Image (cartoon, helix red, strand yellow):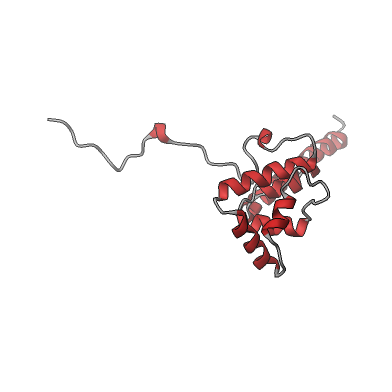
Length: 152
């Protein structure tokens, strides 16, 4: 007679590591392009495709968020490679992020400056790590001072 299967025990082989706390593209090549503008356009196109909203709806949500008119035609111009004179400004870019809910787009603003975007709930962990680094630096300094003081 076969033993009944234990449904309460987790499958160890099904475990997946947690996602890293940084909000960014898993593969940087997904948005890599010849120019910064082209990188933004690739990322915006990816966000549009993944959010499954038509461009008209994205434009309407951007308009509602900003309290100003944003038409589909304007969004078309922002997202066109050929229309180099129509580059989206940061305020409308934030509205685009709000409409698509693709927060990876924020990494395009932060990463050129060596910064990362993380969820607010991880700020305590970052602060703790920074404190640990300061403690280690002070311990090294203390050790060097003690060696000097004792003549070692």
